[in-house]
Image (cartoon, rainbow, N blue to C red; front, side):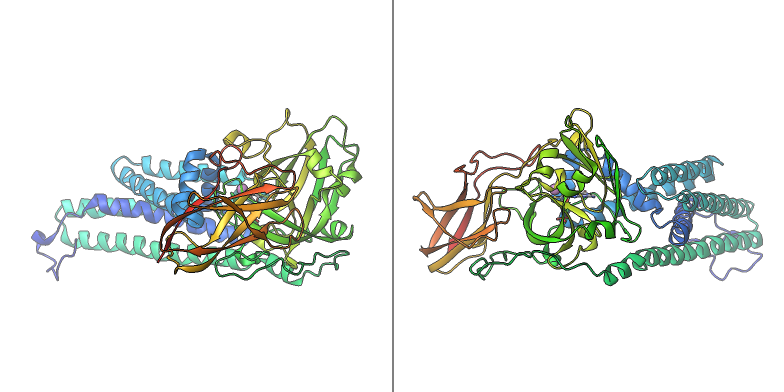
Length: 528
Ligand SMILES: Nc1nc2c(c(=O)[nH]1)N[C@H]1C(S)=C(S)[C@@H](COP(=O)(O)O)O[C@H]1N2
Ligand SMILES: [Mo]
């Protein structure tokens, strides 16, 4: 757009005035890119958690109101985190472009704005849980670099514009070249350094090696999946959810890296003696296996935010006993390394008949990073957000009237038992099935008492009892199946479960907030 086509040096008519605002906006973006690149570089070197984009993203995760968060999850599904980061990036780019223009027009306003942005990012970084002592360094160095780039590039741009306005062709070309050279090289450098550092930061974690090397003591008791527990039916969920297929829900933008050799679990609050355990201390208390189905409060009727695994761990009650819980306490606030908290009724953790555990392994391997490595909680019968804290490092014994957890001020109940539920896995809505014998099958769960029966209703017919697979235990879901002589046409299939206490699944529909969805799933099947 500003190319002076093979212009003879003396011909002043070819000196064109640059599109200064566009170049200023670009310089602003390059300045922000420099800020981020320097910060990422030093984050990779001295403080891995000090990435400005991630810190600002995490800050946004924490402050966005619940309806927006739900919208984000429904719009973007499991990619909501990537969508958020892209959004943060685009927002930063627009702000940086504005800062560039302001610096050009009203010096030094743009530089001051970039400085303020850097300070805010620094605050977002150092106030996050788990921020190290050097966490301020990357964003501060980045901010200095970003401000310097903005001041220098805009100064060159001004020289270029001034020369063009003076119709001084020689000077205009020189200053133009100097501006483009500085801006271009800085841009390339920022992209190379920034992307390289982020990749370095994300891929060279010593924790991955620590997980590979981890050898856990053999569990003293194991869970065997009984004969008849798992039917292999097309479309039906397996009774044990493979780790790679297990749903993931958390507020962590990047998965926390926790080194088991430096990990500590602290128990304090309303206890006789605060306790601190290392990873070895914990596993040396003796490991057992437990089959437990985990469910998210955000699971809609018929949804897939539920999975079942064999967890290896240590009962939480044994650890609480070491600390000695005071009699007027009624809640345990568990906290993860990234500051997330959950409020669990004390009784759910101390009950001798319910095995709430600190889990260290999932389906026979150390916890995957996304599922809480090295230690997470698993509590039968409670939704994950009030019990299943991943990357757990601290328990505070307290009271519901004294403390609250992450989701409590964000529209979810402080206490939330999992609602008795059933779901149709096959046939799937929208996938036509041929007429004849069709197997209708799905899953049902009723922690902590177990599923007594599952019934299916086709169109407006009678409720028919289905066949249940052999349960692993009462804390694990079961499969159910029913053979159906399907005739051509559209049919509704409804399902409902009853637990072993005789409670029928709630028919009334409820949304996921504040304490979990309810309603009988009804799906439409086309038989051809
Ligand atoms: N540290 C941490 N732990 C957490 C959460 C979180 O956001 N951060 N989310 C909870 C929620 S809402 C659920 S449903 C379960 C999900 O566990 P999963 O991702 O292993 O399936 O983790 C729980 N533990
Ligand atoms: Mo959840």
